[in-house]
Amino acid sequence: MAKPKTAERDPGRRVRGTTQEAVQTARAEEAGARFEWHYGRVTRLGSFDIPGSREATIIWEEGGVTSQQGEINDQQWEVLKLAFQTTGRVAVLSDLPGDKWMYDYRFLEAVR
Image (cartoon, one colour):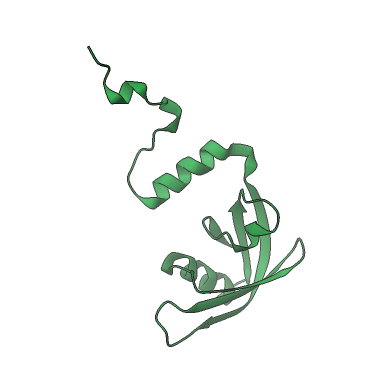
């Protein structure tokens, strides 16, 4: 008799929920200590006539400045706007190596 497919899976890799947030949360939990917080200040925001064309410039506390154009989704844009209109501070939680975390907005928060 064949085993059900669910019995063959690793129970530590199950994701409850089908949303992108559920998958990202599961990835963050799986990564554990590899994720680090990075802080910066939003100094400039811009949007253009072309749909989806947005720009954010951030000065990072660890050094460096990034200006990301495009590939900023609606949820990320709302967080960046909130930060810009209040304290200007943002934080990203990232597991990417080197300076790649500066463009990783998967886990983006406005900071008080």
